[in-house]
Length: 253
Ligand code: C5P
Image (cartoon, rainbow, N blue to C red; front, side, top):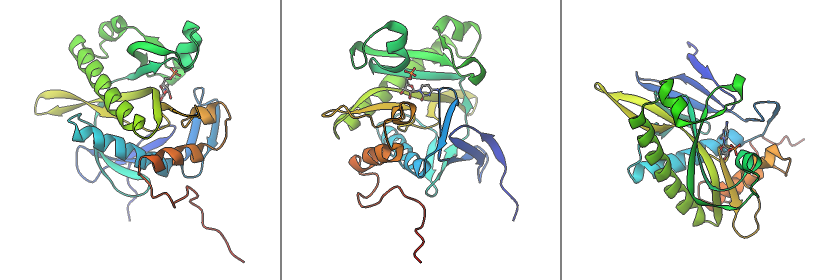
């Protein structure tokens, strides 16, 4: 059998050619990286959890009319997605201070923002994804002013949806990152949510205890990352609560 064609390999996902033109297969790996891949590990079961969680969030967004690249989940680790032209920006929405914002601005983690803040980083690993102003984005042609208005409105709709769903299961959405893709319908470009939405790309804090349930567990060595993601999945009803994340069979002698 012919091997399928690999289109792109990222830090946490691989993209393969899809079964039809305009589609791709997105494979979720178990690899975890942080600090621009200076820290790395393999976390058993992370890919399975993120595949399920991203499916859950993308489906929920589609149900409220927010367009995404997600078509359907294929198996434990793969989903069929629309092939898009990625806008080279990381679109970050912050509801509470944390991470690079707290560091840059000297604001204590957990301080509420006056309103959700949308900011942009230029996607470039070699440069460490620097934060960029809208002026750069428009001047260098990464997106037009109209695109940016649409991207901000998409990001805020995603924020409203995610905040509400997560609040309902006792989780505070501190911040998150999305990526945006451009697809062409006839001659007309359209912007849609792409990549993934998972605890790899969000900060999620338990409302009662403050426990971190996202990639900061890995970044800051706070415990078992897959346990934290399993907790999010269980609360959202994405995985039956009796399923553990252990993917390996146990050998019984
Ligand atoms: O590090 P910083 O505070 O800027 O991150 C803001 C949010 O964006 C966090 O939820 C983080 O997980 C996410 N992020 C990401 N990928 C990056 C940078 C940030 O998913 N390359």
